[in-house]
Image (spheres, rainbow, N blue to C red):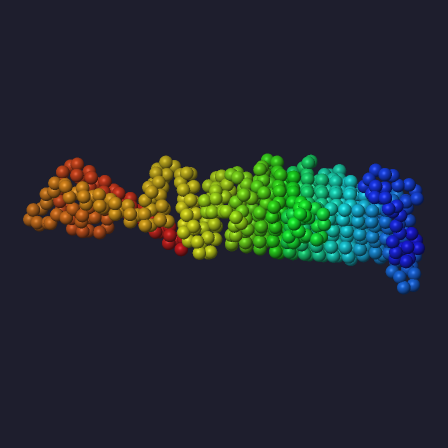
Length: 504
């Protein structure tokens, strides 16, 4: 091993038998495959110089490291790559400074690496960690890879403790299994964060992913991946016959106050929540939100205060009534996938407002109007008025019904003209058979039943008929009904016109 270190070559103790060489299997490895952690630390911190023309590096395969590998606070210059190795005890890397550390398909009880600093990558692909990883305030110079890793919780219930973590480029954790809380509070990712095909499970707490105030320069992926080779299908359509694994989360997700430079992609994601758990996207900011996963049967989706330029969604992805909150949710464009008519969009709003709130209706109407869908925008605002009517006292509710039946709260003004035409025609026919006598015979007025009905119906214009004729008592009651209907129509038209003017 000492010579391989100076040579920069691999020191490989694997036997070639897959069952024996499996670092996660039950087959014991004897002393012939073991090396003391103290010797490994000695090589890395104060090892011999490289041979002429070589670069010293520690490359081990199929080695069992006994004892605690303690590099805390150390300055490690050589490149490190361990494949198929077993660690008897935890790795201690807090405040250490390394170039690149690659641990691939290794069995490790725990990695303690708070404030770790690497100039290059940190790889833990296909590793199994029985007591979690601590990367609090760590700085990874380029990529952090956790593909196909299986990580169990520590004594605090966390699988990965990465609060304040900074990753220079990509944080890739595809097809990862996390059995505990994945905590990335305040983490910063220089390019994209990929959880494609991963399964997050939290059986002992509320959240499986806890990442408020996280910043991702490009995209957060909660999408499917190939179950055979994620590197070949990440971000691409897999070949026919390839087994694809979806992103699944059993536990709450918190992304509050996060910043995502390109998008959040939840295509085909599956969420399994308890009643007190939620997918919390409060006050996030992103140009694009692709809400295209499966509908969660329980829990809530919260978009309160979120700011999105383009919302791409489908009707079957949103929770039912009581499972959605989006007060203050701001979006500028809507792109629907599949069948999502306005009637279902109104149900979407109703699900988000179990108690009446005008803001989501006004926001949807503004978005529809900006895209040229004026008729749909008016339907949304009419639905808002009908929701509001249900909260009013009985007198105001009756007045609301009158406005709805006549002019649809001003959003269908043509209906008022139809009502007036019907009432005028009925009045003209009726009053044509009414006995009538001039109030002042000397004026000698000319009786005109259609003009008389129009004079009663339109209260602000004088057609020279009303006030000149004396009708029997029962016909006076009929005239009063026409006058009342005229005032109701005139008032509702005025109310609708003022509403339209205020909206304009």
